[in-house]
Image (cartoon, rainbow, N blue to C red; front, top):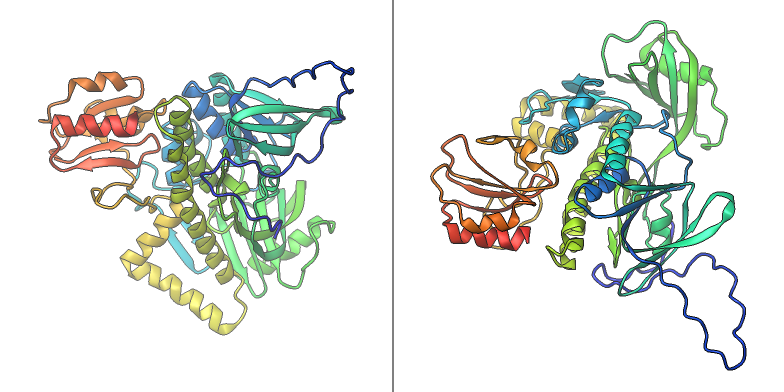
Length: 519
């Protein structure tokens, strides 16, 4: 656990965590002279910390919504090809499609219709989505697209800028930043989002603990060339006390991820190619002629989650809020969906269309999802590590259960793909409130296309009279009709979930719902 400070309630913008270091005090004023007031920087609406996929998507969304945003990244400016993530799931592809980015990634990735994980076979081609697959694509390709979008939208980037302290008050957040050469300055913001990874400086600065534990140590990663490539796009297996999986990057290299029970060493222990070969041979019976590694590393898998995703004016997203095992490839995807949930809410608050309390729903909606991902990915990893006959029998039995019982299979695939989650609805709300809406065809085109620009979408039956007052919201609302004979009216949030629904709404009720949710 990284800390024990009890955080302030999520809704209270209370000062937390003194600055880690302070500049030297100014010289004392002359006797009798009034002290000069300290300059107060003009607040930036949002500072996002961390330029991984989560931070880039969030910053790009805000900038496209007209909210000035500065992104701080402690690394130098470069898009690394050494990232661990290797795939984008269906729900994330839907979110990217709502931003006009999915087709570009689909053109350079490889669709995988089934996720074979040891004795488990998760069929993805049955998913109710335009993207019934896992798109195998290196994380750096996703980052390139998201960074370009953020730059074009006007995000201000500051690289080699490390957050060293945070102070909050009723009006904003002061972020202390160490720049190149150790120079320290401060940035003032109305809100700060920490998307700065597992070792988040933002999370530490606000005193939030990160409870959990390491699940597995000394997992090896290697990007190598193979003389004989596996026949399957995603090759995964286990044998005895070892497991490994192999994924192509499309540039001649393959990502090897592996583990062996009797090799439990620190992450800092040197890793050689022969050790990687041994793990792969122990798993598959051959090493595919691997050679020419361009990168090798060890890491350990943790399961951790911050108790709060919001402390006053500071919020956490992605690995800064939750980390889990790589089983199922859910890490990058959960972070992207955090960002999609949070960005439109921050934009609504900052543009005066909603009150600050809307940000509390980020915790309500996304914290349970993060917890569920910890459970599902951890369960898969524990099945993979099974080394006793009874444990292996359970793994085989669960795999067979998935194949023969439809509801169990659909639930498992829905969790891994991200399509199966729904958000809690207020008491008395329509049964569809909080449900994800597929990319349905409307009279104006596809739903995902109507969402572009961070817009709400009102979908009405063909015969419903549209209220004239909707024109007041035309910069934030798209209006369309069902192409089918469906009689339900839906107001879809910018992240694709139902904000409000009615089976028999009149024009006044529709106008009231739009005013309440769109602002």
